[in-house]
Image (tube, helix red, strand yellow):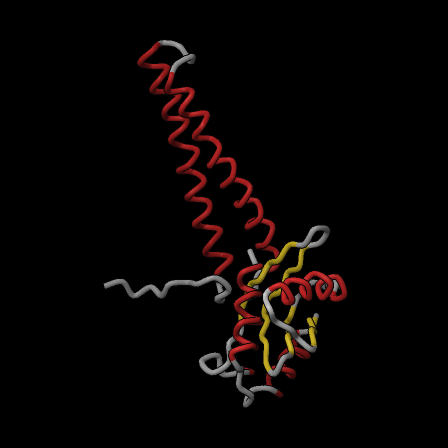
Length: 193
């Protein structure tokens, strides 16, 4: 029986896990076109054959996978480390309150790395270790996406201090999330890498 728990998007450790998956996927997607080129050359004695054509077409999904891999490599700088995860999990009951981790969202001109986020009582708040987190640009990016999905959030606050985020989490520890809060968090997952 498999004891490994499935790591879902925006669970703690998701970005690290997904990087490993993408590396393996990328290697496999590049390996079979290269193998086809070699097989075609060995069988036909020339690189101008149907195997080469199929191999070149096979490089399209491989190239797409490579772009995705580069994004996951870029996001590794912003993962929620174990010490911060411990602080967050000690501040709230993670079985009762939905807290999402390792969100890496991209806008047209900016990337928004958020190590942890939650939504309670129509307030979205989170933590980012990025010292100059562009909170105004983030809100500008997020508000239209919320509106397009029929959602609205009163407050958006991203702390750049884990201590302030911990204090905020402790203050809402007994609050509960309603269906709207969970939909906002689901949207955050959907727009994250």
